[in-house]
Length: 79
Image (cartoon, rainbow, N blue to C red; front, side):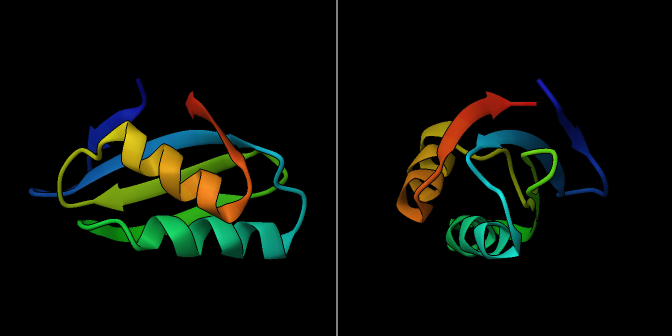
């Protein structure tokens, strides 16, 4: 599990997402995940398939999975 606390009240988790191939893909995934309550930042990198999410508390993986699915991609799990 790749989750760690950056600052008090902040948790960063890295997820692996399959199917991203360009900047548009990154934007779609980032936009959907940003809509999850508590998310403060999202950085998606198509070349590695990694999505780094910073939130105020640990996120429910099913909520992240649903957001990634809505963007048209597949959550492979935590990196």
